[in-house]
Image (cartoon, rainbow, N blue to C red; front, top):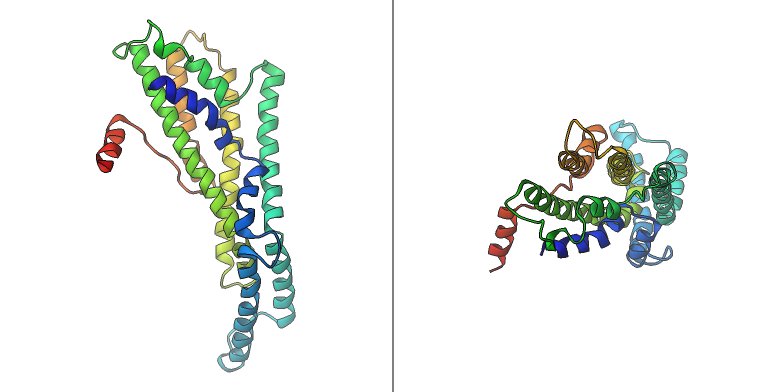
Length: 272
């Protein structure tokens, strides 16, 4: 079972963490290929709703003396937002490309300077060799066996966490046209600011993870102060908490999960 978990983690974890522009292809049919399909069609229709709302607010402002944007200013801003919402996938794809390129540069830096393949696949294979759990040296009740078994479930928890992040990025891509449209009004601009902050924080997470992985490969495993097993546990725990660290700095969705023996049993109990 543990060997099977490791093999599947090796296949998917890097793809979940280091997203690239291909992720936008999976939501194209939902968002729309043009201005007359999908979410784009709904948002383009809502432009008239924003115009009607502004016209009513502008007329009432003469009676209530409420402060309203000047007509030319509002029309110009709405026009820019209409262009942006129809090009939302291009804008989001460009942002994803920038962060993907930065994370790839960090990984390539480690490959160039230290001749290490900076990836989760290499890290897991170094910490948990594929033949470890089927070899005679494995014992669940030994210190090394307990550490490596916990590490396996830790990597499983990490995979689920980044799968949640992957889905959240897709959700934010679908909401992108609405976010750009909301920027046209001061009443709804807070939605765009929240969307933009969450989207950037989820993308920046992979840059942060690339830096952590680079440090993991640079650290000398033969350090005389601490055993390599303890250092590996510390590195893995840092990868677990990367989302929390970023949340403290810039704010983001929490995608942390805990996969432990009691939690696994609870899943089976809920199904049967």
